[in-house]
Image (cartoon, rainbow, N blue to C red):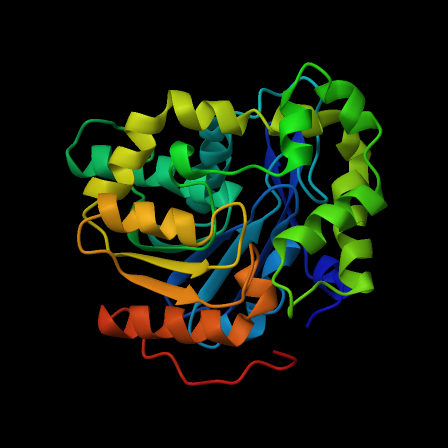
Length: 309
């Protein structure tokens, strides 16, 4: 496990318009590019338990999206999923990336679905913007891939309600900890240090004032369902789902829907694991991801045991 300060010490900045977005790169510079996309309401630090092991064979890229972690949290920003996808594509292009793999979680899954939709359009020659980018594969962790199976936490419902701004301003470490404990597996609960750090990252740079705006991705999923579910079901690139089955938000019930809709589903279910498998069962996630990448000939990934896993 990497401490939050160690993670922050390795950060860089990308000037996206007027906003200095916090980024992190690392790993094997000669390896395939792997983009890691975090979820709500946390940040890129979610990948700290996998970072060194993934870096053995991949060139790693991650960032705190706008409104999250240590990145700016402008009150006037729209926080549409397309805006986050624009940010990511701009950064990857700036980094000189042409082809990349995706490992995503939660909110990041939805961003990945938008990126997959754009990738499909580019392969058909339907869009010119970002034409140099191509997705090679996508691996998705627990997330609301299908609006009809998403079971939001109580705090998410409150943030989305007319009381949202009031609820956001009164959010606290204890309320966040209560939610996190409920959505983690019973035997893989977050430590007090992790909970402290989650809260530090949520409230950094005035984060409480935009939480009710970030949560708008939930109704956006319904409005854009055809595009995003369609992209997942028809993409030309290999897709893998690794799912903590104990997750009350997007666990076994979401996997059932995935099997119904996605042709030839490639799924690894993790018994007893909750909403954050990359933190709760990092070795199992690494093993499943490694097998997926090897099977499709993308990387000869070593059977490395994660420190602290």
